[in-house]
Every structure is written in structure tokens, then in C-alpha cells.
Image (cartoon, rainbow over all chains, first blue to last red; front, side):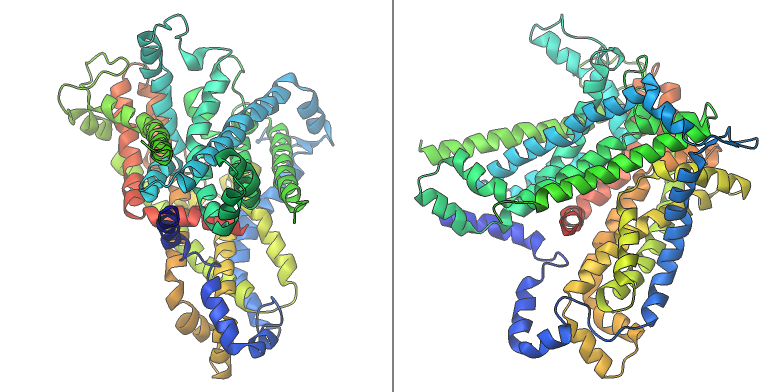
Amino acid sequence: MQTGRRDVDDRLARDVDGKIPGRHDGGDQIIRQVVGAERRHLDGGKRAPGEPRRVAYLYLAPAFAFYLLFAFGPLIYTAWLSFFDWDGLTVGTWTGLDNYREVLEDPDIRASFVHSLVLIVFYALLPCALGLFLAALIAHGRVRGVTFFRAVLFLPQTIAVVVVAIAWVWIYAPDGPLNAVLDAVGLDSVSRGWLGDFTFALPALGLVGTWIMFGLCLVLFLAGIQKIPTTLYEAARVDGAGRVREFFAVTLPGLRGELAVALTLTTILALRTFDLVYVATSGGPGTTTTVPSWLVYQNAFSTGRVGLAAAVAVVLTLIIFVVAFAITRLVDRDPSR
Amino acid sequence: MTAARREQLLSYAVLGVFSVLAIYPILSILLLAFHDRSDLVTGFSIPDSLDFSTFSEAWELGSFGRGLINSFVVAAAVTVVSAVLSTLAGYAFGAMRFRGSNALFYLLLIGLIFPYEATVIPLYYVFRDAGLTDTYWALILPQIGLSVPFGTFWMRAYFRSSPASLVEASRLDGASSFVTLWRVLLPPAWPAITTMIVLIFMWTWNEFLLAVVMIQSDELRTAPLGLAMFAGAYRVQDPTLTAAAAVLVALPIVIVYVLLQRSFIRGMFAGAVKG
């Protein structure tokens, strides 16, 4: 009975999983068996087949032209601009590291990076925790309709953040649905205009991030759980492990890779929050919801401090690189493997 | 009731609660939009009748027809060009050996993580000096530049997974590299390409920062930019109208999502996990 349900779950997962590029291991194995040693020889281990070929550069050229001209080049140019004091109109003056000193010392800029840290809790940690919980529930609660729930929970991820922001501004409004709920359960004293509140505006924005991200995390974890061998779960059950121990002993270790990807993606997106702040709060009330992206935009295109904006952008980018690198390393250094 | 049965019911209950949480904010603006503009809407009030007039008013006032066309032109151009370039580059990385392939690949990988925040400042000033701000080009070219890393990464993973013997056999038959790609590798690659197209299209459609910086004139606004401006002007005194506008802008992607839900989800996690 139990195993039967599991089979259904597996099949549900496989009809999505089976078509993923890079997951053709089944077919690959058959070919390997048939062609055997010959293929391994041709393949040269993991490398692409054939002799080194110059024609490859021809295939790469157009993609690299666009990438270097419109993405990588401008990135370098931003770094260059960050050493200047420039208003965007007149001639700039070289100021060395002055802009970076200001990034480190200016309380408003520092506050914006702290706000980003708070947002990481809401955009990354909370959705990952929720996603893990829900994934464990779906995958082994022997639930039908996984495809349906997955589609519904993933929906927030597909909608433009501008639209999302407008929806949540309404929910948080003084006479909006959230306060209506609070009033209905007798918590009138708590209700307020949430996005206009100095204490609650930032967490309120953060919860919007949680709402956007938890479906993404869930989908990643569901895919990962399907790859954990069912024998591990059976072994755990034979050992008398309950659902909780099973989760910590089998599911969580099995999801290391997916957890890393989810954390990296959501953390980067938290650090890049711009649309939501632009539409929902414009950094206010006061400066309680300013974020680095917002300061980049403000300084470069409103207050004419292009060099400073570039410095903020460079620091933000460096932080993103460090986070991506650190999370990957943390997962690679797995003691149990 | 057995323990297993109880557990199952609990699972459904929790999933149900979270599904409602995921849908309600979207539903709430839909309900708001169906109210008459003169209604004073508070909390959970449900409209007495479905009033579509707010939608047509928002459509006229915000010229969202224009905005949706702009968004479509930009997203289509970015998606088509990026898909072609990425397929070619992914083919080189995935099925050929050449000097410096690792170094070039890492160079491209950097493009997977850095944001528009890091490029938009010089892009704006260079495009301004070239007289290209306030044109489709200002939105299309940079977005191709930042979509190509993902696309190439995606197609490389696909071509790596297709059997090497196929490429070898084709070469031994004397086929040129392009014929190998076109006749042998591409036909079975369509599901992977479709997913890539869907993802790049969605990201481009929803992109905001670049549009806010590059576009000044009303006629060239993309749908999300038009919506942000519209909300700025009408949100306070006319929430129903703003809600209707938001629904209009969200609708195209939601329809695509409902139709191609599998491609979306498959791509979202497969692409990510391969990283």
C-alpha cells in the first residue's frame, strides 16, 4: 500500500523530471552498455568529442559579442566610474577610493545594506524553511494532486513584481484586507497602515518576498526529494525512525544541493530588490526601506552622484559574488560524502 | 480513522492553507478591480456585480494597449535573438573541444549572477550619447547581453547530455558542424529550447529597472513601467482603477503560465540545479 502510493508520487515527478536536459542518464546508460568501451574511448572521459576545432569560435562569436558589449563591458565600466566624482553632465574628476569611503561611512548607505540583510531573512531563509517543510509534507504525506499544488504555489514567481507590489500595497492598506482580518479577530489595536509604519514597513516588504519565493524553493526541493533513493526511506522506517527523524536523517542531507541552489538564488534576488521598493514604499517612511539598488538608481539618475552610485553597485555586485561563492563552497564541503 | 489517514488529511489541510495564501493577493486585486470606481472598498468586500467598466477605463487612461505591444516587441526580439545565439554558443561549449573553452565558459558564468544594477549606469550614459535612450534598442540590446549567459549555459547542459556517439557518427559521415547541429542535434532539442524561450520571455517581460532608466516617453513604456507610473498617479485616489490596470498587465503572463506551466516549472528547477 505504502509503496504503491510512493510509486504514484514518483511517476508524477518523473513526467516532469524525465525531460530535463542533462537528466537523460537512463538513455545514456543504455548507450554506454551497447557501445561500451569504444564510447568511453571516443568520449575521452567527460570532455566533448572530437579534435580541437577552430570552428567553435565562430559559433561563440555572436553570443560573446553581445555579452561583452552589453553586459560584461558595462560591468567593468561601472567599476571605472566608481573612482570618479561625476554628475553625469560635466567632466568628472578622479577621486580614487573616496566613493568607497563614503559607502562605508555614510549611515544611510550602510543602513541600506543592513536592510538587505533583513530582506535576506525574509526572501531566503524563511522561504527555504517553508519550502523544506512543505516539500517533506507533499513528497511523503502520500498526497495526490502534487502537480496541481505545485503549479498554484509557484504562481507568485511568474507575476511581474510591479503587479505584486500593487496587490500587497492594497493588502497592507489602512482599510485593506489584513487590517480587516485583525479587526475581525479583535486585534483592532494592532491594525495600522503597515507600509507607512517606521517599524513594520521593512518586515512587511520582506513578507512579500517570502510570498514570492516560497513556491520556487518548494519546487526545487520537490525535484530533489524525488532523486533520493526510496531504499533510504525504507531503511529509516525499518530502523523505526519517525517522520521527524526521517526528515533530518534522510531528506535534509539528500537535499543539500537543492538547498544551496535555492539559498543562492533567493539571496541574490533579495540583494537585488528594486521594483518592490520603487512601487510600494520609495524607500520610506523616512529611509526605513532603502536598499542598495534604490540608492544606485537615486544617486545615478536623480541626485547626479554617478560615481557614488557606481561604487554602491560595485559593492553590491561583490557581495553577490561572495554569497554565491560561499554557499557553493559550504555545500561542497560535505563531511558525510 | 487510522494514523496514516489522519496524517494525510493534515497534509491536505496545510497545503490548502498555503495555496490560499499564494492565490489570495492575486485574487484580492481582481476583486478590487471588479468594483465600481465610486465604491468605497474596504477589507474583504466582494463586488455585488462584475463590473468590467473599470478595466476599459484603466485600459484607456494608461494606454496599456501600447504598453503591452511595447513589452511584446521587446520580449520577442530579446527572446528570439538570445535563443539563436545561445543555441550556437551552447553547441560549441557542449559538443566541441577547443582551446580556452574553460576560461571562456567561466567568463560567461559571471554573467549568470551579476545584476542590471551593475551595468545600467554606463549603459544609460553611453546610450544617451549615442542617441539611443528612449528607443527599443536601449531595452533590447542590454537584455540580449544578459540573457545569453543563461541561454548558453542551458543549451550547453543539454548538448552535453546528448550522446557523443551521435556527433561522432555524423562527423564520420562527413557532415559539417552546422549540418550536425541542424539535422542531428536540434530536432530532439526542442523541449529544452522551448523551456529556455519561455523563461527568457518571462524575465524580459517582467524586467523593470532597465525600462525605468532608459525610457522617458509615454509611447515607449513597457507594460510594467506603464503600470508603475499609472499606480503613482492613481493609486491613492483610485485603488480600483489601479487594481484593474495591474490585472491587465499580469494577465498575459498568467495565461502563458497556465498553458505552459510544465515548461516554466521544469526550467526553473532543472536550470538552477544544473548550476
